[in-house]
Image 1 (cartoon, rainbow, N blue to C red):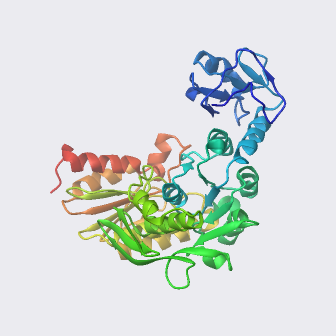
Image 2: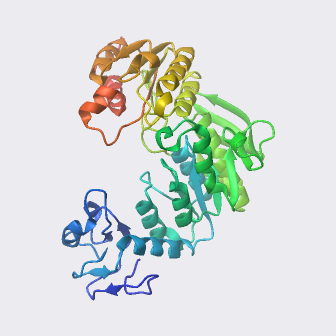
Image 3: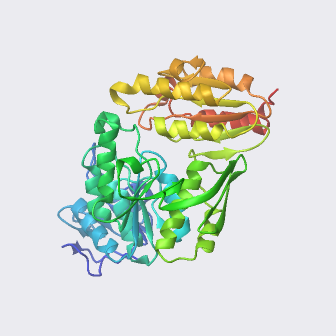
Length: 430
């Protein structure tokens, strides 16, 4: 429990009505009798506006600069939150930080399973990471933190907060180029996680970081899986003589599993037990989730970059049956976006039997090009047949309106949902 009346690593005035909490949140909608609220400044409004609502929801205390019942009153709630997070993180003997252009969340999930660790949820902003460190820092279990960036300087801020004992870079590719400028800029910013600490990099990223130990498959890899066999049923390989089976997994998941086993090996954990935990990993929705049935849907619609789409298309090519790719716009690619979409579309035409594109750059992405998602669905749902395998992938455009998402061909989770409804009997394919 987080007791506000215990010794705090920052100066504060604690109201007598403040009570211990199980965890913290920066989102007042999540406040409850077990969840305290941190009132942070935001881009449009200050969290102080929601202090009363959080207290009404039963929040044990609020971290704020306001003088209200139940307050842990501080001059600056954000600085207090970060100070608390650093203090709790310092209590933990093993924290792993993971970044990369592709596969961060997948790597996090497999690393956490292998280490039997606590791990960050999908939402990985600095306030979210701080709340996570405060909740789990003193737990004794290893911690795995996903550290995504989209602007220069952000990784340095994250490293200053998380202080990972092990830094991991899964991959380096064309992502967030509008802010980071180039692939070399991506590598430079992400590489900050490796400086001055134990580092591991995936084989794709290895050329950017000479001398850093590697994980994955192939000759000369420091921590190598052996005998990789990827089929529609999943992936199998061995690591240091231990067999590993990953249901409905692709090469990307297998590489993440090797990372997890490498971390477990370095931590002195039994590899057979780690391998058994890997077999049960469930990644969050939209990240290469295979839905088999009369036809198979591969839901990889959470986000997209050229490297990620290429890897997903390579995985699609391992399936039997007619292979269909449904691709939408990849965001934040800067001045090279048309060229990069064309390159991805060319790869799709090599790996898939039928290619769809939607929204901006639809013609580059697929032979069947549509302006909007509803127009795409009108064709796709009449085209789909038993035995087909459909890959769906695009960037999400989370902050966009539904109308713009449909227009630009982002947020293709609606395509996945429609396909699954059809597969499950709403409308029988031919």
